[in-house]
Image 1 (tube, one colour):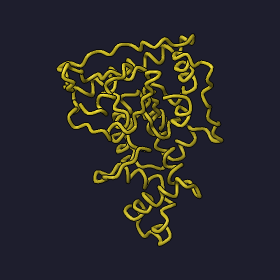
Image 2 (cartoon, helix red, strand yellow; image 1 turned 180 degrees about the vertical axis):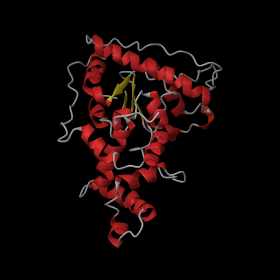
Image 3 (tube, rainbow, N blue to C red; image 1 turned 90 degrees about the horizontal axis):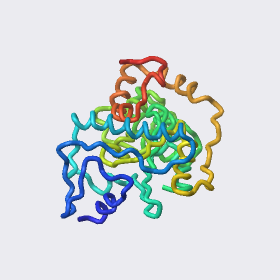
Image 4 (tube, rainbow, N blue to C red; image 1 turned 30 degrees about the vertical axis):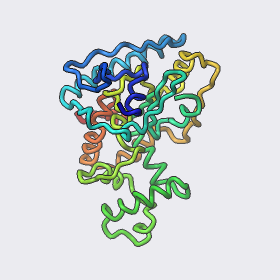
Length: 284
């Protein structure tokens, strides 16, 4: 059995919901999807936060079961690279799924858990940080790597400067790029969390959300006896998130919104997010 697969399966905190480790070490799909156990972490004194965390895990289980009835994965197709975003802390028996634009840097400062965020917020954060921002090392890479390609394909009568720099990609052009049927280029900064973290394959006992990051982190740290560690807090944005979302998404067409919903369909379903949170009304 390959070492990477053995390491993936050995962690008790995320025994795979769809697979079973047999005597010979093979991985097989089960005929029926077993119910996950509720988180067995001994969480801190905050009963409300503890209840929310348990509810998220149970909702994820329910949503996974619904999706897997229609889209059961072929476990034989998984390769080591599919687990590139999964980090393991064997000392504390914890697993952390690295998701860009979801405060992952803060978690990596203190320990290795899955933190999710509304996909439309995460997408906008990636656009503003990697394509819209000027004079930043990381943004220059993305503008060169993706921006020039986007301008060339989606902008009529683009100037030579735009084609050369790729530093003025609009949000609409970016959306067209990532949702294009023929787009074979992806990046972890906007790739669906369901593909990065494989939440219906890996049995996460705890799902943290960006919106309640500090509260969730406090519970996790207390549960492993590290309550003395202070989880880094992020500086407050000068502009409210709701205002930013309205500013950027109001400029998209109905077709673009529909394609985004399809692109992030599984994330929206698994983690109980709604487009109403972004648009102020439902498209259902």
